[in-house]
Image (cartoon, rainbow, N blue to C red; front, side, top):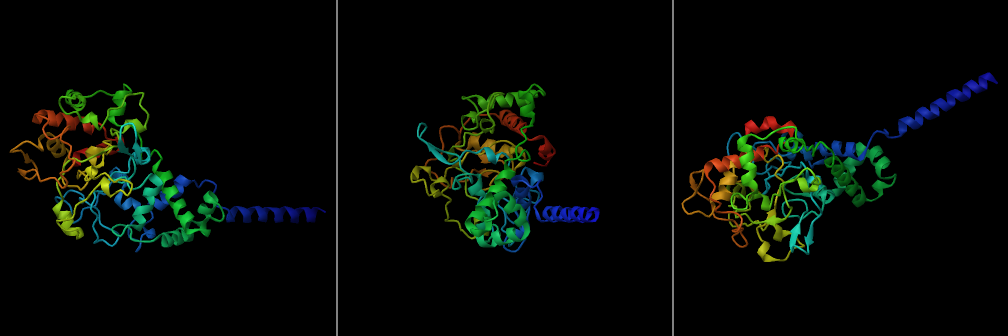
Length: 385
């Protein structure tokens, strides 16, 4: 009897060991799987590019790589290269920090404005839909849903089945959506949205602005001066996280010039026009041509180059552009030449920018304030910008 009991104990122990070995780790979550996928270069066509290639966690989830589109030898490219190393996009890779709080793309009937959505023209309704597109983009990861799912199945099958069901791979479409959901779950973690900038500390009474930063904030909010807060509202301690990103998530045509260097590299040519929001299939109003979503200003001081096409080298130039774009005789301080002609002139915002009458000292103060919006772990990057 004792022998039988001992044998049964050994048998049960082996069964438990087998079941444990064949079962995915219980610690795997959508967030942790998403992080692995986000950093996995093998999921691109030739295994050379991941989401993290263009959204590096050490650089505020932007693309720090220099390439032929860089405005100088020290700056990242104005646009990113594809996984083949030679294809060029047309839009500067935006920071993925705080992207989780961008509302779904929709038309606000009360304000009569389009709001939210991912990508600067809002063509992805939400974070999940956005996560799908870089895999399929011919200028980015250059692959297909079927190939991504096959590679994910080979590497992460147990985790996928544990998190999304045993039959998740029966449908390529559903499996690909599950991949995007995992990436989106990772992007919703605190790694992307820490809310620990100097500005946040000042709100909580844990830090103090310098006199210049305080002046910058005053000018930022002053409707008769910078008036930046018209599109980049300043949060209070009571504001929700979504309301704390220094953006109203609407769309605006700033009258930015073409990036001719980028157009020569990506083959679109000098006659090509980026229609911005009008390229969103849900938008038909031609007056919205050339409008792009107002970006969050969190970490803006460490995410050069600037504007949607990476046309400006530094943040101070952007404020000068807002200040003097429409002032006769004014010049781009980076080139010492007149500001370039707007890529799209129709619908250009002439009410809130173009001639703000800010002094050089006031421009610098606004920039000083915007530097306080930098997450603590990226503050060391400010000196490099």
